[in-house]
Length: 331
Image (cartoon, rainbow, N blue to C red; front, top):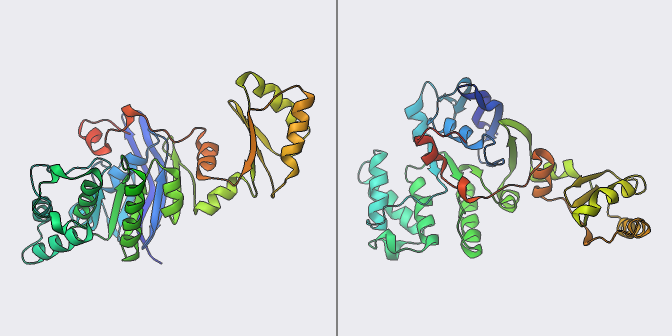
């Protein structure tokens, strides 16, 4: 399968600060490709270079064989973008929102009318076509935002945290719409703060931290980097953690690491004796664990192993990349 996106050793500097450091990513046609990283990791700067919003310091980006630096207008016609904020004109109807966006892409009549009608049907907003978007629920507005990003029939769709702010029901509904778009032939690049979302949707994932690609692989491949089998997890009082780690490290005979008040161990296979052995060791040291158990590796385990922290969602960091870049603030 051919690559629709080729990011080749791309560097982006802001003065002396390197936001993206020789990033190379290839996205195949028809993939859902995830880009994950802590806030400030460089993932959104990478997306902004893909969109032509930011110039590349060095390296190259090709979309469908076109060099974005040499063919910016042609490339932009191939890309749809859905930001994490819902950007709809609340005083306009659903139809008017779509018609304006279609006009911005220079879609001529009668194709424009057909595309708008198809978009309203896809978003299940036909009954609300003449209703002002400001009266819509959050889920309805996100559906309108998604089809608006597809109005020019792009080959590549970039979804920047598409389910932010949605409840569970609307999030699952958005997942199904993303899968349906992908099944229709649209290649998707997804950034998300929900690791289970990346696990459920993405064919492959790149994890970026401090502007560097830490790992690329399928969710299964990435999780196998953490453990071939289950993960033993022991939660303790923070004051007991270091003593417990020293006691367990010499006796459990499995790879262990300490993260704050937790001790994690990698099991080669399902091992029912690991828990009882750990409890016996801790009892001899007069240490009482708060919780102990095993679980299969998750994308959160992968993320923490590669970046040293959980994927954060803090209020001050929720401003859209698009808005931040207008003010010259790199992410």
